[in-house]
Length: 115
Image (tube, rainbow, N blue to C red; front, top):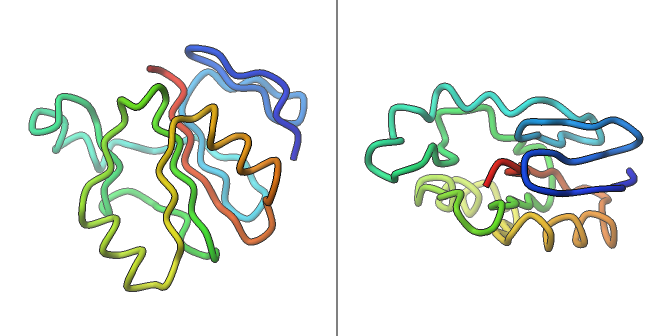
């Protein structure tokens, strides 16, 4: 998986530009479907990552890129990762990309690109 560009509002992965948050699930790049998490937006001031959305749990490590740090991750996600014995790494998206480039094997991701 090649990450060529990342800037506010877009990310380029394997020669495809995405203008939305993405989920990387076992090498497949998908649009993040955050609608199930929208009910928590008022509480967090932003749509967080919640266990209500489709989190790509089939991995040893899950990297969540928080944009510039704005994307909240609910404590239930952290608890679920622990329960599933999945290493959870929550970092700004630029740092998440470096982690994915360095060690992508058995690693899934949720990458926030819009703030």
